[in-house]
Image (cartoon, rainbow over the protein chains, first blue to last red):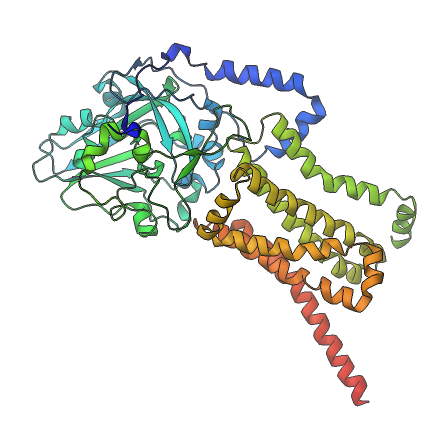
Length: 330
Length: 212
Protein backbone atom coordinates (compact mmCIF):
# COMPACT_ATOMS: atom_id res chain seq x y z
CA UNK A 1 0.00 0.00 0.00
CA UNK A 2 1.13 3.49 -0.81
CA UNK A 3 2.85 5.18 2.13
CA UNK A 4 0.69 8.25 1.84
CA UNK A 5 -2.37 6.05 2.21
CA UNK A 6 -1.35 4.59 5.56
CA UNK A 7 -3.79 5.33 8.34
CA UNK A 8 -2.06 7.04 11.26
CA UNK A 9 -5.21 8.17 12.98
CA UNK A 10 -5.53 5.97 16.06
CA UNK A 11 -3.39 6.63 19.08
CA UNK A 12 -4.41 10.11 20.02
CA UNK A 13 -4.45 11.70 23.47
CA UNK A 14 -7.74 11.31 25.24
CA UNK A 15 -9.80 14.51 25.58
CA UNK A 16 -8.72 15.04 29.17
CA UNK A 17 -5.14 15.47 27.93
CA UNK A 18 -6.10 18.42 25.77
CA UNK A 19 -5.30 21.57 27.71
CA UNK A 20 -8.52 23.41 28.50
CA UNK A 21 -8.75 26.76 26.79
CA UNK A 22 -8.87 28.79 30.00
CA UNK A 23 -5.79 27.13 31.41
CA UNK A 24 -3.96 27.55 28.15
CA UNK A 25 -4.95 31.22 27.85
CA UNK A 26 -4.21 31.97 31.48
CA UNK A 27 -0.78 30.45 31.27
CA UNK A 28 0.02 32.32 28.09
CA UNK A 29 -1.10 35.63 29.52
CA UNK A 30 1.02 35.08 32.60
CA UNK A 31 4.09 34.22 30.57
CA UNK A 32 3.47 37.18 28.32
CA UNK A 33 3.13 39.54 31.25
CA UNK A 34 6.40 38.24 32.64
CA UNK A 35 8.22 38.30 29.33
CA UNK A 36 7.68 41.95 28.56
CA UNK A 37 6.60 44.93 30.56
CA UNK A 38 3.39 46.91 30.38
CA UNK A 39 4.65 49.19 27.60
CA UNK A 40 5.52 46.24 25.44
CA UNK A 41 2.18 44.60 26.06
CA UNK A 42 0.43 47.81 25.05
CA UNK A 43 2.33 47.82 21.78
CA UNK A 44 1.59 44.17 21.18
CA UNK A 45 -2.07 44.73 21.87
CA UNK A 46 -2.03 47.48 19.29
CA UNK A 47 -0.38 45.26 16.70
CA UNK A 48 -2.79 42.47 17.47
CA UNK A 49 -5.87 44.67 17.78
CA UNK A 50 -7.25 43.33 14.51
CA UNK A 51 -5.68 39.93 14.62
CA UNK A 52 -7.46 38.93 17.78
CA UNK A 53 -10.93 39.80 18.97
CA UNK A 54 -12.66 39.41 22.31
CA UNK A 55 -13.23 35.92 23.75
CA UNK A 56 -16.62 34.35 23.21
CA UNK A 57 -19.24 33.98 25.98
CA UNK A 58 -19.00 31.30 28.70
CA UNK A 59 -18.93 27.83 27.14
CA UNK A 60 -20.97 24.77 27.94
CA UNK A 61 -19.43 21.33 28.20
CA UNK A 62 -20.74 18.51 25.97
CA UNK A 63 -18.90 15.56 27.62
CA UNK A 64 -18.05 13.60 24.47
CA UNK A 65 -16.36 10.21 24.35
CA UNK A 66 -13.42 9.65 21.98
CA UNK A 67 -14.55 8.38 18.60
CA UNK A 68 -13.57 4.84 17.66
CA UNK A 69 -13.95 5.56 13.96
CA UNK A 70 -10.84 4.90 11.83
CA UNK A 71 -9.33 8.26 10.88
CA UNK A 72 -11.19 10.21 13.53
CA UNK A 73 -8.24 10.64 15.88
CA UNK A 74 -5.60 12.67 14.03
CA UNK A 75 -2.29 12.55 15.86
CA UNK A 76 -1.09 16.02 14.81
CA UNK A 77 -0.70 18.59 17.60
CA UNK A 78 -4.03 20.24 18.23
CA UNK A 79 -4.49 23.87 17.23
CA UNK A 80 -4.81 26.20 20.21
CA UNK A 81 -8.50 26.96 20.80
CA UNK A 82 -7.72 30.66 20.90
CA UNK A 83 -6.54 30.53 17.27
CA UNK A 84 -9.34 28.25 16.05
CA UNK A 85 -11.98 30.57 17.50
CA UNK A 86 -10.45 33.88 16.38
CA UNK A 87 -9.35 33.15 12.82
CA UNK A 88 -12.46 32.20 10.88
CA UNK A 89 -14.01 32.48 7.46
CA UNK A 90 -17.71 33.10 8.05
CA UNK A 91 -18.55 35.70 5.45
CA UNK A 92 -22.03 36.39 6.79
CA UNK A 93 -20.22 38.34 9.52
CA UNK A 94 -17.51 40.00 7.40
CA UNK A 95 -14.54 39.27 5.18
CA UNK A 96 -11.79 39.61 7.77
CA UNK A 97 -10.69 36.55 9.73
CA UNK A 98 -11.46 38.42 12.96
CA UNK A 99 -14.94 39.58 11.93
CA UNK A 100 -16.78 36.37 12.92
CA UNK A 101 -15.43 36.42 16.48
CA UNK A 102 -16.35 40.10 16.72
CA UNK A 103 -19.85 39.94 15.23
CA UNK A 104 -21.13 36.36 15.50
CA UNK A 105 -21.96 36.54 19.23
CA UNK A 106 -25.11 38.47 18.19
CA UNK A 107 -26.42 35.45 16.26
CA UNK A 108 -29.35 33.72 18.01
CA UNK A 109 -28.72 29.98 18.21
CA UNK A 110 -31.79 29.14 20.31
CA UNK A 111 -34.51 28.28 19.55
CA UNK A 112 -33.12 26.52 16.48
CA UNK A 113 -34.69 24.04 14.12
CA UNK A 114 -33.22 22.16 11.20
CA UNK A 115 -35.53 21.10 8.40
CA UNK A 116 -34.66 17.89 6.59
CA UNK A 117 -36.75 17.54 3.47
CA UNK A 118 -36.80 16.63 -0.21
CA UNK A 119 -36.53 13.07 -1.46
CA UNK A 120 -37.03 11.37 1.90
CA UNK A 121 -39.71 9.08 3.26
CA UNK A 122 -40.06 11.00 6.53
CA UNK A 123 -39.36 14.73 6.07
CA UNK A 124 -39.19 16.52 9.36
CA UNK A 125 -38.02 19.49 11.38
CA UNK A 126 -35.67 18.79 14.23
CA UNK A 127 -35.42 20.93 17.30
CA UNK A 128 -31.83 21.53 18.42
CA UNK A 129 -32.39 19.54 21.63
CA UNK A 130 -33.72 16.61 19.61
CA UNK A 131 -30.57 16.71 17.47
CA UNK A 132 -28.32 16.89 20.52
CA UNK A 133 -30.05 13.79 21.91
CA UNK A 134 -30.19 11.89 18.63
CA UNK A 135 -26.86 10.08 19.06
CA UNK A 136 -24.00 9.88 21.58
CA UNK A 137 -21.56 12.79 21.36
CA UNK A 138 -18.17 11.73 20.02
CA UNK A 139 -14.95 13.66 19.94
CA UNK A 140 -13.14 13.50 16.62
CA UNK A 141 -9.81 15.16 15.97
CA UNK A 142 -9.78 16.22 12.32
CA UNK A 143 -7.35 18.14 10.19
CA UNK A 144 -9.03 21.14 8.60
CA UNK A 145 -7.47 22.38 5.35
CA UNK A 146 -8.68 25.74 4.08
CA UNK A 147 -8.65 26.34 0.33
CA UNK A 148 -6.59 29.46 1.10
CA UNK A 149 -3.59 27.35 2.06
CA UNK A 150 -3.69 27.15 5.85
CA UNK A 151 -4.74 24.32 8.12
CA UNK A 152 -5.67 23.57 11.71
CA UNK A 153 -6.28 20.43 13.81
CA UNK A 154 -9.54 20.60 15.69
CA UNK A 155 -11.24 18.31 18.21
CA UNK A 156 -14.88 18.42 17.10
CA UNK A 157 -17.83 17.11 19.07
CA UNK A 158 -20.79 15.52 17.34
CA UNK A 159 -21.70 12.43 15.35
CA UNK A 160 -21.84 11.13 11.79
CA UNK A 161 -24.16 13.02 9.46
CA UNK A 162 -25.38 9.60 8.30
CA UNK A 163 -27.05 9.20 11.68
CA UNK A 164 -29.39 12.13 10.96
CA UNK A 165 -29.97 11.13 7.33
CA UNK A 166 -31.07 7.66 8.43
CA UNK A 167 -33.81 9.26 10.56
CA UNK A 168 -35.54 10.67 7.48
CA UNK A 169 -35.06 7.59 5.24
CA UNK A 170 -33.69 8.88 1.92
CA UNK A 171 -35.58 7.65 -1.15
CA UNK A 172 -33.84 5.70 -3.89
CA UNK A 173 -34.08 8.74 -6.15
CA UNK A 174 -32.05 10.93 -3.77
CA UNK A 175 -28.55 11.44 -5.16
CA UNK A 176 -27.30 14.58 -3.40
CA UNK A 177 -27.73 16.48 -0.16
CA UNK A 178 -28.01 20.26 -0.25
CA UNK A 179 -27.07 22.17 2.92
CA UNK A 180 -28.36 25.67 3.58
CA UNK A 181 -26.94 27.93 6.26
CA UNK A 182 -28.77 30.55 8.26
CA UNK A 183 -29.05 33.98 6.63
CA UNK A 184 -30.37 36.41 9.21
CA UNK A 185 -30.10 40.07 8.14
CA UNK A 186 -30.71 41.23 11.71
CA UNK A 187 -27.58 39.63 13.10
CA UNK A 188 -25.35 39.11 10.05
CA UNK A 189 -23.86 42.44 8.95
CA UNK A 190 -22.27 41.22 5.72
CA UNK A 191 -25.35 39.79 4.00
CA UNK A 192 -25.55 42.96 1.89
CA UNK A 193 -22.28 42.03 0.17
CA UNK A 194 -22.71 40.48 -3.24
CA UNK A 195 -19.77 38.05 -3.22
CA UNK A 196 -22.09 35.22 -2.22
CA UNK A 197 -25.67 34.70 -3.31
CA UNK A 198 -27.02 34.27 0.23
CA UNK A 199 -27.99 32.08 1.97
CA UNK A 200 -24.78 30.04 1.88
CA UNK A 201 -25.34 26.72 0.18
CA UNK A 202 -23.23 23.61 0.05
CA UNK A 203 -23.71 20.11 -1.25
CA UNK A 204 -22.44 16.55 -1.08
CA UNK A 205 -23.08 13.46 -3.11
CA UNK A 206 -25.31 11.19 -1.01
CA UNK A 207 -22.57 8.55 -0.69
CA UNK A 208 -20.18 11.25 0.54
CA UNK A 209 -22.76 12.50 3.02
CA UNK A 210 -23.29 8.95 4.28
CA UNK A 211 -19.55 8.35 4.80
CA UNK A 212 -19.04 7.98 8.55
CA UNK A 213 -16.27 10.61 8.61
CA UNK A 214 -18.71 13.27 7.36
CA UNK A 215 -19.77 14.83 10.61
CA UNK A 216 -22.46 16.94 12.14
CA UNK A 217 -20.60 18.98 14.76
CA UNK A 218 -22.23 20.66 17.74
CA UNK A 219 -19.09 21.47 19.63
CA UNK A 220 -15.32 21.78 19.64
CA UNK A 221 -12.71 21.49 22.38
CA UNK A 222 -15.29 19.63 24.47
CA UNK A 223 -17.76 22.53 24.54
CA UNK A 224 -20.63 23.79 22.42
CA UNK A 225 -19.52 25.54 19.24
CA UNK A 226 -18.72 29.22 19.59
CA UNK A 227 -21.00 31.16 17.23
CA UNK A 228 -18.09 32.14 14.98
CA UNK A 229 -17.34 28.47 14.35
CA UNK A 230 -20.84 27.69 13.11
CA UNK A 231 -23.10 27.29 16.15
CA UNK A 232 -25.33 25.59 16.93
CA UNK A 233 -24.47 22.90 14.40
CA UNK A 234 -22.33 22.62 11.30
CA UNK A 235 -21.03 20.20 8.77
CA UNK A 236 -17.43 18.94 9.00
CA UNK A 237 -16.09 17.07 5.98
CA UNK A 238 -12.40 16.64 6.79
CA UNK A 239 -11.19 15.45 3.37
CA UNK A 240 -12.56 18.50 1.57
CA UNK A 241 -11.55 22.16 1.66
CA UNK A 242 -13.04 24.00 4.61
CA UNK A 243 -15.66 25.91 2.65
CA UNK A 244 -17.51 22.63 2.05
CA UNK A 245 -18.18 22.38 5.79
CA UNK A 246 -21.17 24.72 5.95
CA UNK A 247 -21.83 26.47 9.25
CA UNK A 248 -25.00 27.21 11.24
CA UNK A 249 -27.16 24.78 9.29
CA UNK A 250 -30.84 25.62 8.85
CA UNK A 251 -31.90 23.14 6.20
CA UNK A 252 -30.89 19.87 4.57
CA UNK A 253 -32.56 18.82 1.36
CA UNK A 254 -32.14 15.55 -0.48
CA UNK A 255 -32.30 16.03 -4.22
CA UNK A 256 -31.77 14.19 -7.47
CA UNK A 257 -29.93 16.96 -9.36
CA UNK A 258 -26.49 18.09 -8.25
CA UNK A 259 -26.97 21.33 -6.28
CA UNK A 260 -25.06 24.46 -7.31
CA UNK A 261 -23.02 25.54 -4.29
CA UNK A 262 -22.56 29.13 -3.14
CA UNK A 263 -18.89 29.35 -4.10
CA UNK A 264 -19.49 27.52 -7.36
CA UNK A 265 -22.03 30.17 -8.27
CA UNK A 266 -19.56 32.94 -7.43
CA UNK A 267 -16.50 31.48 -9.20
CA UNK A 268 -17.14 28.12 -10.91
CA UNK A 269 -13.59 27.88 -12.28
CA UNK A 270 -12.09 28.32 -8.82
CA UNK A 271 -14.36 26.42 -6.46
CA UNK A 272 -15.75 23.17 -7.76
CA UNK A 273 -18.49 21.00 -6.33
CA UNK A 274 -16.12 18.30 -5.09
CA UNK A 275 -13.39 20.51 -3.60
CA UNK A 276 -11.46 17.48 -2.36
CA UNK A 277 -8.13 18.45 -0.81
CA UNK A 278 -5.57 17.63 -3.48
CA UNK A 279 -1.95 18.87 -3.64
CA UNK A 280 -1.80 18.09 -7.36
CA UNK A 281 -4.80 20.16 -8.43
CA UNK A 282 -3.96 23.83 -8.00
CA UNK A 283 -6.43 26.60 -7.43
CA UNK A 284 -6.31 28.70 -10.63
CA UNK A 285 -4.67 31.52 -8.71
CA UNK A 286 -2.39 29.70 -6.28
CA UNK A 287 -0.70 26.39 -5.57
CA UNK A 288 -2.32 23.81 -3.29
CA UNK A 289 0.87 21.77 -2.88
CA UNK A 290 1.65 23.06 0.62
CA UNK A 291 -0.12 24.52 3.61
CA UNK A 292 0.68 26.55 6.70
CA UNK A 293 -0.35 24.81 9.91
CA UNK A 294 -1.70 27.36 12.38
CA UNK A 295 -1.68 27.46 16.16
CA UNK A 296 0.48 24.37 16.71
CA UNK A 297 3.15 26.32 18.54
CA UNK A 298 5.77 25.75 15.85
CA UNK A 299 6.35 29.48 15.50
CA UNK A 300 6.94 31.97 12.75
CA UNK A 301 9.86 30.22 11.15
CA UNK A 302 8.13 26.87 10.67
CA UNK A 303 8.12 25.73 7.07
CA UNK A 304 4.89 25.16 5.22
CA UNK A 305 4.01 21.47 5.16
CA UNK A 306 3.13 19.29 2.20
CA UNK A 307 -0.60 18.98 1.63
CA UNK A 308 -1.88 15.38 1.54
CA UNK A 309 -4.31 13.90 -0.96
CA UNK A 310 -7.81 13.98 0.58
CA UNK A 311 -6.16 15.83 3.47
CA UNK A 312 -4.65 12.54 4.62
CA UNK A 313 -8.00 10.71 4.69
CA UNK A 314 -7.32 8.75 1.52
CA UNK A 315 -7.37 5.38 3.35
CA UNK A 316 -10.95 6.08 4.39
CA UNK A 317 -12.41 8.01 1.46
CA UNK A 318 -10.36 7.38 -1.70
CA UNK A 319 -12.71 4.62 -2.83
CA UNK A 320 -15.55 7.16 -3.11
CA UNK A 321 -13.67 8.61 -6.07
CA UNK A 322 -12.31 5.45 -7.70
CA UNK A 323 -11.83 5.99 -11.41
CA UNK A 324 -12.74 9.68 -11.23
CA UNK A 325 -10.58 12.34 -12.88
CA UNK A 326 -9.85 14.50 -9.83
CA UNK A 327 -8.47 17.35 -11.96
CA UNK A 328 -11.67 17.48 -13.98
CA UNK A 329 -14.00 17.08 -11.01
CA UNK A 330 -12.21 19.54 -8.74
CA UNK B 1 -0.32 79.96 14.17
CA UNK B 2 2.58 80.03 11.77
CA UNK B 3 4.78 81.76 14.27
CA UNK B 4 3.93 79.11 16.84
CA UNK B 5 4.87 76.39 14.36
CA UNK B 6 8.15 78.13 13.66
CA UNK B 7 8.93 78.20 17.38
CA UNK B 8 8.08 74.50 17.69
CA UNK B 9 10.28 73.72 14.69
CA UNK B 10 13.17 75.64 16.16
CA UNK B 11 13.19 73.41 19.26
CA UNK B 12 14.55 70.65 16.97
CA UNK B 13 12.22 68.20 18.64
CA UNK B 14 9.72 67.69 15.84
CA UNK B 15 11.90 65.68 13.51
CA UNK B 16 12.99 63.11 16.12
CA UNK B 17 9.39 62.88 17.26
CA UNK B 18 8.11 62.19 13.74
CA UNK B 19 10.91 59.67 13.30
CA UNK B 20 9.87 57.85 16.47
CA UNK B 21 6.23 57.86 15.41
CA UNK B 22 7.19 56.29 12.08
CA UNK B 23 8.92 53.49 13.98
CA UNK B 24 5.85 52.76 16.10
CA UNK B 25 4.20 50.29 13.65
CA UNK B 26 7.46 48.34 13.44
CA UNK B 27 7.86 48.35 17.21
CA UNK B 28 4.31 47.11 17.70
CA UNK B 29 4.83 44.29 15.20
CA UNK B 30 8.05 43.21 16.89
CA UNK B 31 6.40 43.28 20.32
CA UNK B 32 3.38 41.42 18.92
CA UNK B 33 5.61 38.74 17.40
CA UNK B 34 7.61 38.38 20.62
CA UNK B 35 4.46 37.92 22.68
CA UNK B 36 2.56 35.80 20.18
CA UNK B 37 -0.16 38.42 19.87
CA UNK B 38 -0.30 38.61 16.07
CA UNK B 39 -3.28 36.29 15.67
CA UNK B 40 -3.51 32.72 14.45
CA UNK B 41 -1.50 33.46 11.33
CA UNK B 42 1.36 35.71 12.45
CA UNK B 43 3.22 35.35 9.14
CA UNK B 44 0.21 36.70 7.28
CA UNK B 45 -0.25 39.51 9.82
CA UNK B 46 3.40 40.58 9.44
CA UNK B 47 3.35 40.44 5.64
CA UNK B 48 0.13 42.40 5.34
CA UNK B 49 0.88 44.98 8.05
CA UNK B 50 4.27 45.85 6.56
CA UNK B 51 2.72 46.12 3.11
CA UNK B 52 -0.03 48.38 4.42
CA UNK B 53 2.49 50.63 6.13
CA UNK B 54 4.70 50.84 3.03
CA UNK B 55 1.72 52.11 1.05
CA UNK B 56 0.62 54.47 3.81
CA UNK B 57 4.06 56.07 4.14
CA UNK B 58 4.33 56.38 0.38
CA UNK B 59 1.03 58.21 0.17
CA UNK B 60 1.83 60.30 3.24
CA UNK B 61 5.02 61.32 1.48
CA UNK B 62 3.06 62.33 -1.61
CA UNK B 63 0.75 64.40 0.58
CA UNK B 64 3.56 66.64 1.85
CA UNK B 65 3.80 68.93 -1.19
CA UNK B 66 0.04 69.59 -1.40
CA UNK B 67 0.08 70.22 2.35
CA UNK B 68 2.99 72.63 2.02
CA UNK B 69 1.33 74.58 -0.77
CA UNK B 70 -2.10 74.56 0.86
CA UNK B 71 -0.88 75.70 4.28
CA UNK B 72 2.12 77.75 3.23
CA UNK B 73 4.19 75.90 5.84
CA UNK B 74 7.51 75.21 4.17
CA UNK B 75 8.58 72.77 6.92
CA UNK B 76 6.51 69.98 5.37
CA UNK B 77 9.10 69.69 2.60
CA UNK B 78 11.70 68.65 5.14
CA UNK B 79 9.91 65.36 5.84
CA UNK B 80 9.78 64.08 2.28
CA UNK B 81 13.04 62.17 2.53
CA UNK B 82 12.16 60.69 5.90
CA UNK B 83 8.70 59.48 4.93
CA UNK B 84 9.97 58.21 1.58
CA UNK B 85 12.69 56.21 3.31
CA UNK B 86 10.18 54.82 5.79
CA UNK B 87 7.99 53.73 2.87
CA UNK B 88 11.06 51.98 1.49
CA UNK B 89 11.89 50.42 4.89
CA UNK B 90 8.41 48.95 5.30
CA UNK B 91 8.49 47.74 1.67
CA UNK B 92 11.78 45.93 2.40
CA UNK B 93 10.24 44.37 5.52
CA UNK B 94 7.11 43.40 3.54
CA UNK B 95 9.23 41.64 0.92
CA UNK B 96 11.48 40.03 3.54
CA UNK B 97 8.53 38.70 5.55
CA UNK B 98 7.03 37.22 2.41
CA UNK B 99 10.31 35.64 1.31
CA UNK B 100 11.22 34.28 4.75
CA UNK B 101 7.93 33.43 6.47
CA UNK B 102 5.81 32.49 3.49
CA UNK B 103 8.39 30.97 1.16
CA UNK B 104 11.14 29.81 3.52
CA UNK B 105 13.68 31.71 1.37
CA UNK B 106 13.51 29.01 -1.31
CA UNK B 107 14.09 30.82 -4.60
CA UNK B 108 12.50 28.08 -6.71
CA UNK B 109 9.35 28.27 -4.56
CA UNK B 110 9.23 32.05 -4.93
CA UNK B 111 9.57 31.75 -8.71
CA UNK B 112 6.74 29.20 -8.81
CA UNK B 113 4.60 31.38 -6.57
CA UNK B 114 5.11 34.44 -8.78
CA UNK B 115 4.11 32.43 -11.84
CA UNK B 116 0.91 31.46 -10.03
CA UNK B 117 0.18 34.83 -8.46
CA UNK B 118 1.05 37.65 -10.87
CA UNK B 119 0.03 40.34 -8.36
CA UNK B 120 3.28 39.49 -6.56
CA UNK B 121 5.18 40.48 -9.70
CA UNK B 122 3.46 43.87 -9.64
CA UNK B 123 4.50 44.38 -6.04
CA UNK B 124 8.03 43.30 -6.87
CA UNK B 125 8.19 45.76 -9.79
CA UNK B 126 7.13 48.55 -7.42
CA UNK B 127 9.86 47.48 -5.01
CA UNK B 128 12.53 47.46 -7.76
CA UNK B 129 11.48 50.95 -8.82
CA UNK B 130 11.84 52.12 -5.20
CA UNK B 131 15.49 51.03 -5.12
CA UNK B 132 17.00 53.87 -7.20
CA UNK B 133 14.91 56.38 -5.26
CA UNK B 134 16.19 55.11 -1.93
CA UNK B 135 19.74 54.96 -3.32
CA UNK B 136 19.60 58.60 -4.46
CA UNK B 137 17.96 59.92 -1.33
CA UNK B 138 21.14 61.55 -0.01
CA UNK B 139 22.02 65.18 -0.54
CA UNK B 140 25.24 64.06 -2.17
CA UNK B 141 23.33 61.99 -4.74
CA UNK B 142 21.08 64.97 -5.42
CA UNK B 143 24.15 67.13 -6.11
CA UNK B 144 25.82 64.48 -8.24
CA UNK B 145 22.74 64.03 -10.42
CA UNK B 146 21.80 67.68 -10.57
CA UNK B 147 18.33 68.79 -9.50
CA UNK B 148 16.72 68.36 -12.91
CA UNK B 149 17.79 64.77 -13.45
CA UNK B 150 17.19 63.95 -9.79
CA UNK B 151 13.65 65.22 -10.02
CA UNK B 152 13.04 63.35 -13.28
CA UNK B 153 14.24 60.13 -11.62
CA UNK B 154 12.11 60.71 -8.54
CA UNK B 155 8.97 61.10 -10.65
CA UNK B 156 9.15 57.27 -10.55
CA UNK B 157 7.22 57.65 -7.32
CA UNK B 158 3.99 58.11 -9.31
CA UNK B 159 4.13 54.76 -11.17
CA UNK B 160 5.26 53.17 -7.89
CA UNK B 161 2.20 54.55 -6.09
CA UNK B 162 -0.03 53.15 -8.84
CA UNK B 163 1.72 49.74 -8.88
CA UNK B 164 1.38 49.50 -5.10
CA UNK B 165 -2.33 50.15 -5.37
CA UNK B 166 -2.70 47.61 -8.21
CA UNK B 167 -0.78 45.07 -6.10
CA UNK B 168 -3.26 45.49 -3.24
CA UNK B 169 -6.31 45.57 -5.50
CA UNK B 170 -5.27 42.40 -7.32
CA UNK B 171 -4.45 40.63 -4.07
CA UNK B 172 -7.97 41.38 -2.86
CA UNK B 173 -9.73 40.58 -6.13
CA UNK B 174 -10.24 36.94 -5.16
CA UNK B 175 -12.81 37.84 -2.56
CA UNK B 176 -13.98 41.14 -4.07
CA UNK B 177 -13.10 42.61 -0.73
CA UNK B 178 -12.12 46.15 -1.60
CA UNK B 179 -13.14 48.24 1.41
CA UNK B 180 -9.69 49.66 2.18
CA UNK B 181 -8.56 49.47 -1.45
CA UNK B 182 -11.13 52.19 -2.24
CA UNK B 183 -9.75 54.35 0.54
CA UNK B 184 -6.20 54.07 -0.80
CA UNK B 185 -7.49 54.68 -4.33
CA UNK B 186 -9.41 57.79 -3.25
CA UNK B 187 -6.40 59.21 -1.42
CA UNK B 188 -4.13 58.58 -4.40
CA UNK B 189 -6.68 60.07 -6.81
CA UNK B 190 -6.77 63.20 -4.64
CA UNK B 191 -2.97 63.44 -4.51
CA UNK B 192 -2.48 62.90 -8.23
CA UNK B 193 -5.49 65.03 -9.16
CA UNK B 194 -4.05 67.94 -7.22
CA UNK B 195 -0.76 67.62 -9.13
CA UNK B 196 -2.50 67.32 -12.47
CA UNK B 197 -4.53 70.45 -11.81
CA UNK B 198 -1.44 72.33 -10.73
CA UNK B 199 0.60 71.39 -13.81
CA UNK B 200 -2.32 72.23 -16.10
CA UNK B 201 -2.63 75.65 -14.47
CA UNK B 202 1.11 76.21 -14.80
CA UNK B 203 1.04 75.26 -18.47
CA UNK B 204 -1.79 77.73 -19.03
CA UNK B 205 0.11 80.51 -17.24
CA UNK B 206 3.19 79.76 -19.33
CA UNK B 207 1.14 79.93 -22.53
CA UNK B 208 -0.30 83.26 -21.44
CA UNK B 209 3.17 84.56 -20.58
CA UNK B 210 4.55 83.49 -23.95
CA UNK B 211 1.65 85.07 -25.81
CA UNK B 212 2.16 88.36 -23.99
